[in-house]
Image (cartoon, rainbow, N blue to C red; front, top):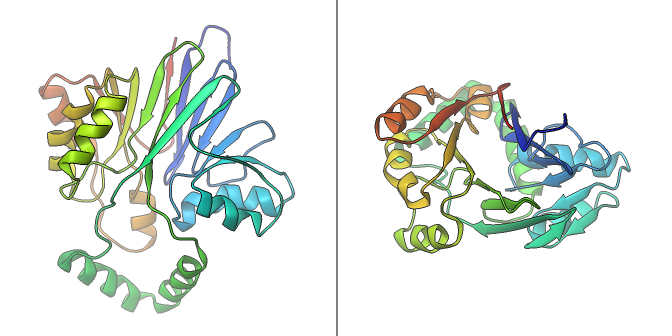
Length: 252
């Protein structure tokens, strides 16, 4: 990274985010194998989120991976990796994580959409179910990365939704509020919840990101733009920005 940069954050598609800092690079849920020296953080057990780490292990790159223990043990079955427990410190970074309850897999309306998708392309549905069955069980997590400077990046993943537990929100806000940079994913039909709940975390700079549309599009499921969410948040006084696929932000 060029001298003078505090941070650069890039969206590489699906849930894959690249975070470059003065000391190196952190890859969240990479779609392709991380390069040597890059830290790979896996936030959940979805097929696309484990894809890059799995590719690196199979290729014999012995990647440095931070993830829940069940994911580390699963990856270890395909080859060598340098698994790191959470919370942990590496290359001057302090990384913490907390699990959260995701949006239900199949609400009545979403269940009908997914059934229609499966009927439209049954081979794709079977392949995905087989891959899903091979993955370890774990809950999704939010992550905080503290830089050597003391500045903090909070990756809220898709934790803000209408089913989010208020006690969980209060506890995590007490730990992680007022981060220098906050990334929040907007799950399908959860714009209202994100706008209502993001205030718990008092973000300084808020990057509102799409972590689900690429996969939903591949499955033939409807998607939503994140721009209306950003417009609402700006109207409410947040320093909010659209963080779409193939976009990046740099902070000096």
